[in-house]
Image (tube, rainbow, N blue to C red):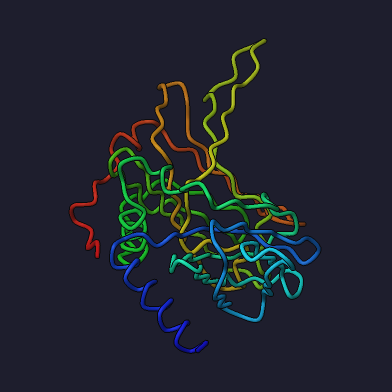
Length: 270
């Protein structure tokens, strides 16, 4: 009976996937704190991508899943899949964070509305295509401190949504642990007696995001941002700060770079 139920749920999930209704989320988990994910319906199936995470339904609550890291500071991104009683299929990209930004996640609201008129499947397909094709369309946006180099390889735009492709290379014998990677819009110059205005931007989504760059290796990540506008006296800044280190990186991007962002026509979007 259990096998039959799982088979029905699995085929329901596949059907939903084909219709473009798969829910996709990025979450952070901690070893010392428990994340609670509240689903719209009862949970029937949970699959964990690796032994780095543990999960279980909360006692007495069929729609609440408790998730934690199985050990501290796991470096590789993993994943988790959940199927609810009605066949709804949820996919999670899971990374480690000592202090997760959210401890309670409610999935009753449709997170996909953040993309406006663009479907989540389109966003996922575009980010995957940008990562897969790995085009080095920009040659001048970068930063290098000691043995760490960070570059912006390309900026794409689709229906007002920006996709920023970042490359980080570590040529040293010491891994780079990323404490903070943040994005902001700020003034280019600080006028005397005037406080600098800064607006921090939270990515809508990310692809292949990591918190560690191993020695003598490189990583690439794609970040998705909603439409924004900058005056000529403003700049978009990417800041990377190393945990317990000094190999920080800063890249400043001009308004013109976003105005000249590439369109996706030549990308092989699946």
